[in-house]
Image (tube, rainbow, N blue to C red):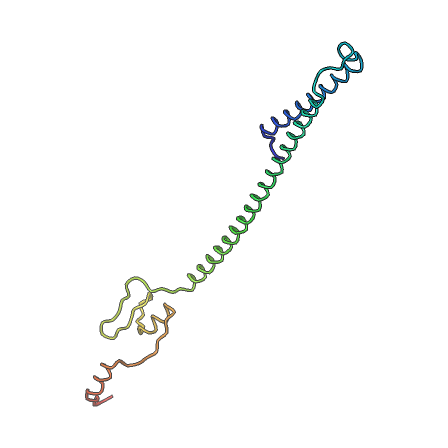
Length: 170
């Protein structure tokens, strides 16, 4: 239910006053003309269109009130449509945000990260795990991350292997 504004009450009151004045003039004229035959048997000296002016003012006031109501209704309808679009957009953005949060949580669950200090042998390069066992660096990194290894030989090691004398015993 919409609130009645002061301006609406004012316009409605003004319309009633105009219509009532028009009616009073008509009744007053009719009363004196028919019952008393006017003053000295002459009709009352008032402009014949005076009551029409008040009726017209009353109708114009009611029409302006109707136009104001119609304009406000249209304005409210446009505002309502705008708010409905905004609500829909916010819901869509919220759904996208929730979807992104779920994707990030899934990605976070899949991530295995190496952090902290890793005890490593300075000679053979094996790494000691939490249970105290020594593992090859490739095995340890493969087990604690998503990384896989492929073995190759760098040019310097290849050159060193070519220039070294082969071991005499295996």
